[in-house]
Length: 174
Length: 246
Image (tube, rainbow over all chains, first blue to last red; front, side, top):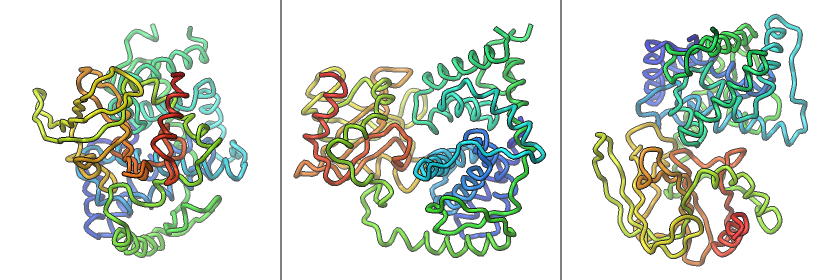
């Protein structure tokens, strides 16, 4: 898995606690280790780079705002919770209000590969897409995803299995 | 054989197909990121903001925000979920029913929705080594699920894990207060219910607060009940019954 190995998660967990104690340098560590996770997760869900940047920005604000509430557990799951509940939804809501286009992929380096990924995810409903991204990109466990999405673990597992089935069909493997 | 293994919660036990999808998702990491992100209190209201600034600027802005965040709770009443963000504005009449639409997901999963008064709350150590909160409720109206005068809601005490904005259940529920409870059944035991949402009922029948799992109730696309100060218990129950086809 890319995203965060256990030692990096430890660093992030400590950084969040330092931030809660008022050590603003900790924000630099959080940004260094978690910004890519947040940005890519948001990009995978919103398919929009500007939205992903907004999500990253909003999530960092939420981290500063709620760092004192972080007690223990996976900092990755905690941050994804903030990302999901505040940033992504807020951005989607704003986008809805502004009637902005969904898609915003340029031809910059990396974006063509992004198009391929988005095309792969196209058959999935929004919840299925989120679950797949949380599971296979961020590496959250089903139980953690269930908490992030306010679903039962079994419901998450079912949706995940259904999503995988759709992806297999899309890839022509069924 | 590409699908030789069943998918697992363990990243080390993924099927080849899951690994393939995971690798594809990681391709998104090749997309360039902003050099830095500015943090300020107005960001949440911005529809589009393209800011690439140095991280040092970010830290200065964040320090200002930190002071704001520290001072902000002093102006809020200590009633659990309290910020204005937690109360969806302007939901009434026709829009009220529409606002319940996201609840479909909740009702699909929930097997118990009731109005009742909390008569006791106590901590209990579970056989699994985890701590639970046992809540005794005098039920006055069962909207969905088994009808009974008394309900015992037993749920995992998550107050020692991460929580946001002091929104743990202990900080929200009050002995003697009435709530609309929407619970999610536990996977392990039907007797252990996890509260998905609890909406406090005022003496005048108005609904002013809501508890949603262990997170602040954000009303965007979450499948949660949207409450404003004009929503009454009577109206809510009528709408719920209509939604449930009763």
